[in-house]
Image 1 (cartoon, one colour):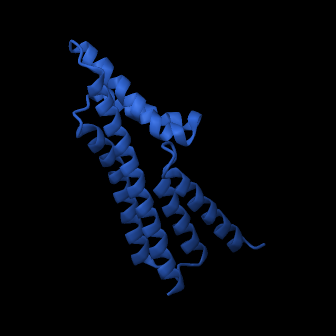
Image 2 (cartoon, one colour):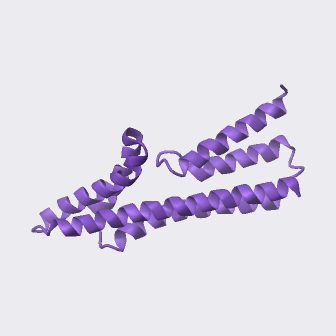
Image 3 (cartoon, helix red, strand yellow):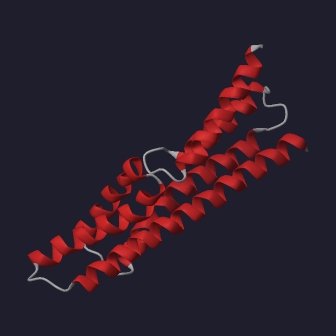
Amino acid sequence: MDMQHLYFAGAAILILIGLAGTLLPALPGLPLVFIGLLLAAWADHFERVGAVVLIVLGALTVISLVVDYWASAKGAARTGASRLAVIGAALGTLATFVLGPIGLFAGPFVGAAVGEILHRRSLAGKDLGDATKVGLGATLGVIFGIVLKLGIAFLMLGLFAIAWFA
């Protein structure tokens, strides 16, 4: 096996880890996909995939990072979440490492709800319904962000494939 094949294998591994990273909060999903695509283009000496395509892929990567933060914040903010609820949702997503896919959905919900309960308690307390609403908003924001990131990931892969095979 020559070095070029090793580069392509490394690119494939980075892309697969990146795709998994669109679901797992601690992995930089689309940046890893981009690095994998860049490595594949480099291994081919940029013969099939040139600068214009790589600039577009880089721009999509940056957009994905903005989308990720925007979707989570928007989901929580639309429900009037407190700062503690947003922090709780972010910490709750770490439950994915312990609970797997269930933690991806339950973690942000529970984290945001607990954060909102703590916030409301310090403000003379409101009912559990508000905390549940905030938890649901945070969870929907996370799901929306995942869907958007997956869409961008497959758009990136499609653009790369078109450039590669054109």
